[in-house]
Image 1 (cartoon, rainbow, N blue to C red):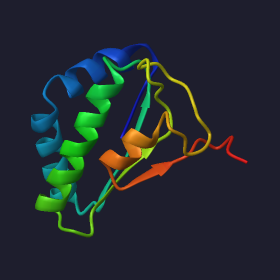
Image 2 (cartoon, one colour):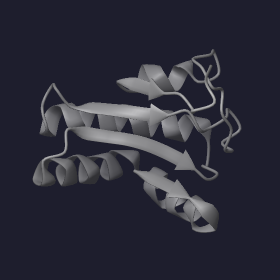
Image 3 (cartoon, rainbow, N blue to C red):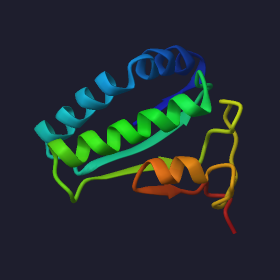
Image 4 (cartoon, one colour):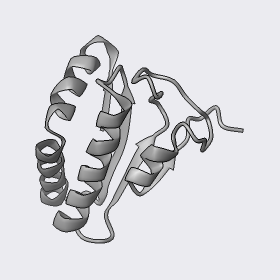
Length: 112
C-alpha cells in the first residue's frame, strides 16, 4: 500500500482520520483477495508520526483478527518524526516506535 506525490497527503489525511475504520476495511480487503497482509509505504506527508503509529497498531491487530496470526504488516522506512518523507536507512530510535506498532520494518534501499 503506497501513497505518494501531491495527492498522497490528502489520501493520508483520509486514511489516518479514523485508523480503526481504515484498518478494518484494509484487513477485509486483504482477506477477500487472499493477501497475507500489507507493506505500508507513506511517500508523502502524513498528519503526524503518532497517527501513523496508531494506524499501524490498528492494521496489525485487524489483520491478525481477520486474516489470522500468520498475517504481516510491514512499515517501509519513509516517515520522519515530523510526518514528512525521510529515510533512516536502518533501525534507529526514530523509527523504532513504528516497528513496535507492526510486524516489521523494511529499511530504505540506501541501507548499507
